[in-house]
Image 1 (cartoon, rainbow, N blue to C red):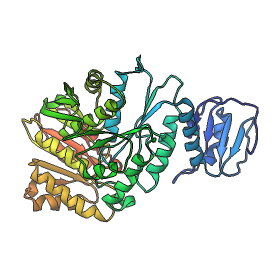
Image 2: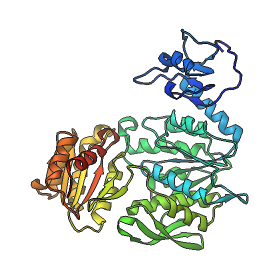
Image 3: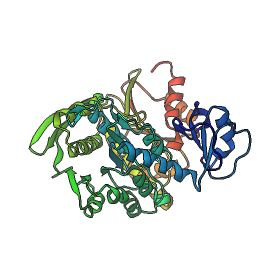
Image 4: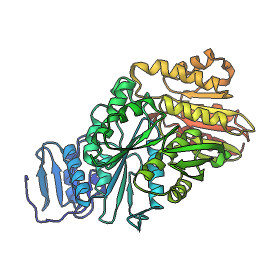
Length: 453
């Protein structure tokens, strides 16, 4: 401790000086752009009773306690781990190249319908909010744990080696799932094998008496799971939990038969695309693995709704919109395009796509392949934005798409203006790209430019 203040009992832990309240603990994190140590005085002025730093700070610290540590990011994780161990909820951890946020939302929705040890879980389930799945977000999530919380459903994300291991150490999960292993974050993880090694850390760090859910339809996941010596709940083709006889409900989602062991039920899912059935079955496997029955699983899945900008569907002036603009990698792009291609459409199917980031040396080839996939799926028109737009166009042309149906925009406004001339009632639009492309802005510009369709 660098300096002891008057206050001995502190409130919530925050990393943003703007969110400080009276008695808060402010942890000064050093990021790529900002250094929290520059805001220590602001935090104290805002009422922080304690500040945690990893270098000397000066200024008007009033009566605040100052704790100096070697690494404030490490300290944040250690504090979160301590709270997780002290309150001892059942922790379910989710990672994967695709579907982890959707799976997390589905698992949490199921648990809200379930009971544990004969007591309802409604209102006693903590989940990762938004994309708080990194070395800052996960600890902040766990630090929100209350004594009444019985289960925590947490998402673990990564873009460089070692992150999943550290996140799993902090969360100390009772159960884990790796939804998939695919080409994502290759800039930091190099190859799909590198992605597998990184994601596999979750299975290695699930508690010894814990269990894992295993996607039998993913070869990499099967391989990673083979080394786990605890209890396994399998899902997918031939799994303990599986789907059968699915059908589209149009813009309302999909319906399928869910089977778990010798039991089955019919599920109406408010999510588009066959890939979301896979996510639903994975979520069901996690819940089934901790003793949740099919009736609660069915109710939870039917109550679950898409996370913002994750296959969100809307009817806008007679035009169908699929807003999947939150993020993108090759596998999620392919799934979204297949969903657009399969939807019942009375007009044209139009893909509005931005670059996929963090693909390293594979970026060019993956964007060429994306263009080919769009063409082979029979998409009618393709609007592109980003530095890799030319490669997507080239891939689409090679696969037989006509040049007049492909448009490259200079920016969001330009792309929206060019779309404005062609969008009609009955069309379906898909918006997707990596987070930095902010493809939802094209949709916003389009809506702003069109008073009617």
